[in-house]
Length: 372
Length: 152
Image 1 (tube, each protein chain N blue to C red):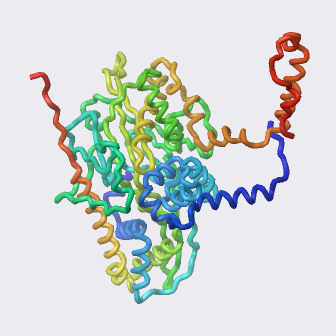
Image 2 (tube, rainbow over the protein chains, first blue to last red; image 1 turned 90 degrees about the vertical axis):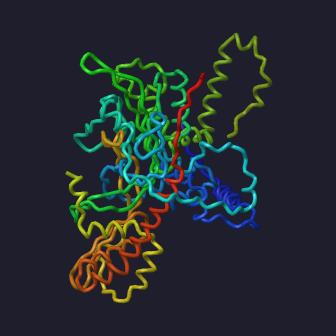
């Protein structure tokens, strides 16, 4: 139980002024602009938008600046802001088959229509510090090929689908998809609720759980069937117009995980799927999500559920870093009254116990008075 | 059903798309340069909100909610009685209002041709240029992997 305390106004104001000073840092150094953050820390912006669950590069950049680069704090700021905006409605589902692709790779097929597009990737860098970036460098401008890439690249999963080698994704929605921001999660959760929860879940948490399944805590055996990143069009049907209009474009990363088989007396063996989709360029997150989507389907696919990554209540209840950091960090708030009551209890227990009298090796306990 | 609608876009759908995707600064510049503008009244003043972006599992299956996107909308009416609507990504009130006025102007015979030539065409050209450049830069990273036979 938390009992409110009063006072400390002046100290709090001064603490906030000090925070603002620390945020600004050395005043001889030029202040960061939002344009700089948006352009040069674009992957931080992407992560804050994905987990902040609001696609707006300007707001995410502002949150990062205000949070002094603390990404989870920035996500908190964006989540708080989004509660102040009215919701105009839903979009039509984005069509990732029509993505303007900037990166597209498959670890399952080397030759596929449209080819493998490496795009801007850390994958083939040597992870050696580049000291040429110490000074402001004139970074090279990327060269253009003579031709465009293929306008619409087929998904790898659709290629497998043609042969019936992978389970079909079927649209099972009979009503509006469950919205975890408007309804509280109930278990068992359906797949759409899981996917929404994972899409806004903490990257680190998802990554660690996905890793745990690869190491044997639950079985997934995934292949990265395809990862694609680029821009997709967002469409809505405004009530007053009654026809769909394009309202903008967002960058997303999609990961199609292909996993081991499932078959039955009536259905021959097929690969199974796991799906990851995030705002921005966010491969680590999209892949982790794809692995977890699949591991959380264990029960549906008749597999034993015995690892954390297969337990939907465990995964979905702990994926939100705003909730998690709030609950962990609330322990910093004054718990003086709480603690006093526990002190009384522990002293009473010790008094009542002959064992404690004989074996009391602690220093003079009277000096350990809690703060009032 | 949706696909047939998508394949045959009306002119209005097309210009609304161009306006929504336009660079805010470029649109503002072209708007300021536009000589003959009608007066208008705001039916719905620019308002910023969000739309819930949806995706499909596997790209084709169950629809689920991915997250929200900031969006600004506006509705105006020209003195001629023609009304214009805008829904544009982001939080720019001026972009939404300008887009709504332009949507009305493009439906008004008196302004349609000049608006199309001076606003929509250059916006389209700028967007296309950016897209082609991005596509060609991506194409330049296309790779041919080959597997090697070992042990021979």
